[in-house]
Length: 136
Image (cartoon, rainbow, N blue to C red; front, side, top):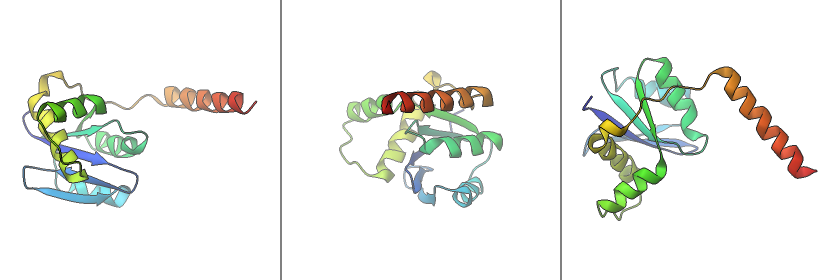
């Protein structure tokens, strides 16, 4: 695959870099996900950083629509950006850097798949137990 879009995602919105000059901002909710889907098809790989819990809903939505999703380590993208002397730090620029990372590092990326339900449930239980232990 040699066609990627890069997504910089935050709590309220996500910025998408379709190409060098093709960028758009969508709401980080089901309506925004559906609007994004109108711009892409299953021949395009979607790349985003593992940024806290914010990427999970979009990644799962796209996976369920048979879109290839790649979730990359934010530190790798940051180092890639530094290596290319990128100084600007905006959401639009970050989305472009993520897309460029995918274009250059395609062979190192692995397709993302959501965790099985029982693993998610166990992680949630573990987090609850940790929180209770901390409160005690």
